[in-house]
Length: 93
Image (cartoon, rainbow, N blue to C red; front, top):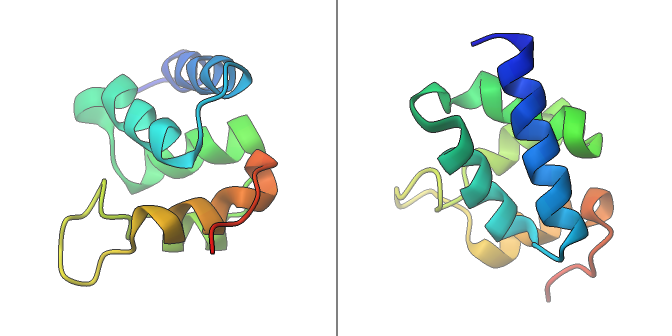
């Protein structure tokens, strides 16, 4: 997985965001775009580069049910609220 691969994913997410995709759609797109290379490091690299989300926030975001369907997973609403500041979205209630 090279820098070009990460940059392509960054560009894909930015384009989708400009077209109105929200946090959960972007999370799913990141997972789909990265395919077998998807993991904590690639997710952090892509979201940090694309949207400037700090690493500590992304560490928590990795618990999203879309990535991790365990009983300790965070919901779609929690994921969206966590990333709202960097995606310029209203926080979910």
